[in-house]
Image (tube, rainbow, N blue to C red):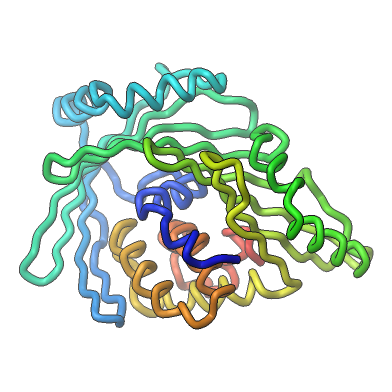
Amino acid sequence: MKLNKILCIPVSLMILLAVTMVPTMACTPLAPCNAKSNSGMGSNINVVETQLIGQDAAKLTSEALGNSDVKSLTEILATRGYAMNKSSPMLANKLELTNGMNITEMQLVTIPFDSKPGVKAYIIWTDDNGKETAQAAISGPASAITKPMELLKANDTFRQIENNLTHQGYTIDEKNATVNEGLSASADVALITINKLNATGTTTGILALVDLSQNKVIGVMSSQSFQCDACVWIATRVCNWGLGGTIGCIDGCGELCATLILDPPLAAFCWASCSIICMVAISVGCSWGATYICTQAGFC
C-alpha cells in the first residue's frame, strides 16, 4: 500500500469515516461533554461539545442548509437515490477547542437522509470561524453500496490476497462486507471491510481504501491477525492519552499515525482506521479494554 496516497485524505473525511460507525453525539442537549485530552505526544487539547436546541439550533441548521456545498452534495445524494429525511431531527452542535493559549470555536450540523435498507446517509456541515465545509457520509453493506466493491474486485492485489486466503481454507463472506464512504467537493473515499471465515470458525479480514473520484483502489491489506493486532495497538494508545471528544481524539490520531512512517502497513491502517477507533472508544469507553473496542469496531 502506498502511504503517500493515504496521507492526502483530508482530516474531515477521516472524521466522516468515523462518524459513519458511531453517528450520535455523546452529549446531552446544552450539556458540555467531558473534554480533556492529553495525547502524550506534545498535544494538550481540551474540547467541549454542546448540543444546541431551540432557536440556536434552528438558526445554525438554516445556515447549513443555505451552504452551496451542502446544496451540491444534496443533489449528488439525490442522484444516488437519497433524499433529505424531513422527519428526523438535524443535530446542531458547538465545539470549543483549547490548545494552550489558543481557543477555537467550531459549529457542526448533521443532516440525515433517507436511504436504502441497512444504509445510513447524511451530510455534515461545519463552520470554523467563518470557514464553512460540508461532507457527505454513506455507510452500509457492500451489496447496497456497490461501486467500491466492483472496483475492489477488479484490483490485482485484492485478487491475489483473496486467492491466497482461499488456498488457506478461507471463504469470502460478502454478506459481512461493509462500506464507509466520505464525499466532499474535493474527495470521494470509501473504506471497505471484508471478513473471511474458514472451516474452524477462524476469521481474518481484508481492509481496502478506494478513491471513487479516480475509480481506483488506493491500497489493500490482509492478515489473520494484522487488523486486530494493529487496532489493539492503536486503541491502547488512544485510551492511554485520554479521550477528549471527537476532534481532540482525531487530532491525536494525526500525530500518532505520522510517527509510523517507517512502518507503512501499520501507518496505512492507522490513517484509515484511527478515527473509527476513536469514535468507538468514545462511545463505549475504555474500561472494557482495547480488544473489546476493536471487536465493536469490527477489526477483531
